[in-house]
Length: 323
Ligand code: FES
Image (tube, rainbow, N blue to C red; front, side):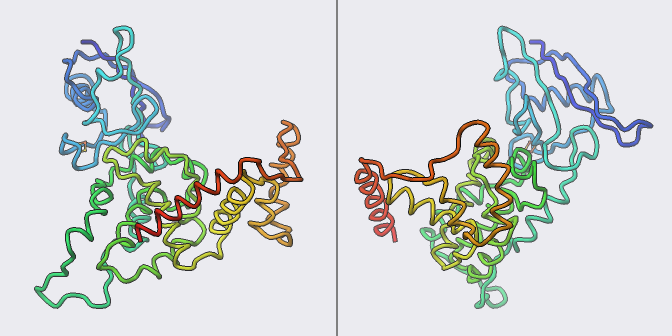
């Protein structure tokens, strides 16, 4: 089976360190992975092709890259998945949102420094004595098994749409790691952790685009973990952020009128005297005017609001039961 690889190249040592694409056609068998083909290219066609890989079993997390526009593990992705009308064409690029060192290899220093910034270790005021274990029951740890499956491959960071425009955002991997320790029953620094995470560039900056959930090869659900962190923060009384206020106003509007009062949302979130913040929204208002999508100033209750309120009651009941 012939497979066409179009690989993004970048060589910082060349006279003109420009990005370009090289095309290779290789013969692979039906079960081959994208990584098998890249290794074959490197070994038999072009030994200058640079990539990272190790375990070839979706364990070490080294081979995350963008394949046909989406981050995935090259060792866990079959070339045959991309067959279209008998042709297989692959566009292979380095993972996004990280500086490229060479070809498909990126610099993970920013990634690790963000993970380190959330203090990814257990903090307990009663640490076990030397050679003792800090024991937690199976039941109290089971809910963490999903997030502990993270292999730190960076696929979520690669395709995070917030990092695309704001490099200071902590990002899905670091926030999922923060959740892992906030939710650990042996950790008693939850309050300090949540306080740190509510700062700008932290948990409230996620836009819930779900891209990290889509591309995570291990089902870690980083966005779901970020939403949980927000819940914990609100429950612990950290409500004085724009994010927490936005959530409260949004919920209040839907609960009381059946739909979102988009006109009041920014006014109540930022406060009507927060002139600078509100002036910053002027371009959005102008865009809305041009596209005739300005929300109504006078907001009416939906006639079916009682059905929506019943949903809220059911959800509240479920939450109380779970607690
Ligand atoms: S080579 Fe280890 S995860 Fe792909």
